[in-house]
Length: 441
Image 1 (cartoon, helix red, strand yellow):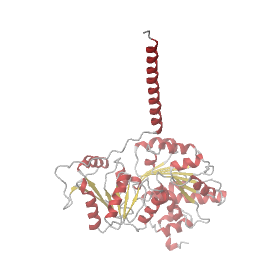
Image 2 (cartoon, rainbow, N blue to C red):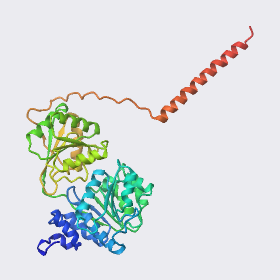
Image 3 (spheres, rainbow, N blue to C red):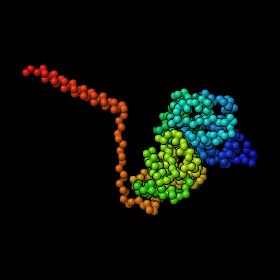
Image 4 (cartoon, rainbow, N blue to C red):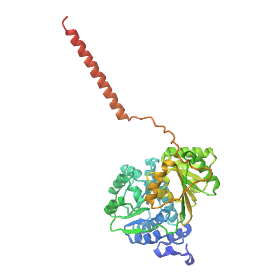
């Protein structure tokens, strides 16, 4: 347990001693601005809408008061009230990687709770029956992606009667067209009496409807970006054909401990991983088509420092906390451009310096100009000695168009149409023959 000499700034929140012990063990000595402003309001029971830049400690800002409320609920209902598919807190996140990371934070900050906090993360790629078996054993805090949670609701694998707290992490992503319908469906299954906590890195206008419909007189917290620039951003003007060679050169010439390289598509991600492995680079890949267990393994290897380079699509751009990440390389520029903020935010975390290098080929200049306009910045265009770009843009390599695949229904309809056409033609031919036969000679 903490001694008086060990008590630090987190003690002012009147957290349970078990949580203060965990905070101390995790090495948090001072709350970040988002934590200092959010934790008291959440403990008061207020709904909260909070925005802060990536790497600012948003996850800890809601997990600590959530666990404080959970301890109080245990006192009211008993420590084993969350059984038979009942849960007490729900955290919705957009990706399985963020789900796993949030579950780790819950486990770390609940490490001294007795009995131990029961937290599970559920997401696609794992059999629903396995999730249901876990929930049956008793889960207090459930971290879930929207689609998998809906599958569990449909299978009657989760019950919300005891739910007290709902967290939406990365709200701006969860209300995008990829998730909005699923999130709204989830909300319809939840009890009306609950505390709602919305956390986001940005405050787009698109979240206003959800805020108005869900939050009850919320405390709005907006922590502006740090004034001190600790992420240096570079734009290297390059030939498209030289991107791989330049990436190899940058990895060899810099003593970065860890590097995250972004590709835009799954195919490009796989191709870059294969090419870098051929060049003897210690690298793993991460994108949505990789099997769930392999994705978790690749991310764990990278976060633990066993692999130096991770090549990923934008699935890794949000929420992932990799403190030792020295550099982000945008091998391909993000689409949509709003993902640029989240890519950049993977480095320069926890007040550490970071670096971003954008490889911009001739055909990408307009796209990067749009990113600069959206971000309100202007970067100096640089060139790398020995890799100067051509003055005239070279032609783009030919694209291999995939073979057109006709859907089953369309294909079946086509067959019916052809058959009807043949029948009509045969009937017409038969009628003509009969008419000819009946003609007097």
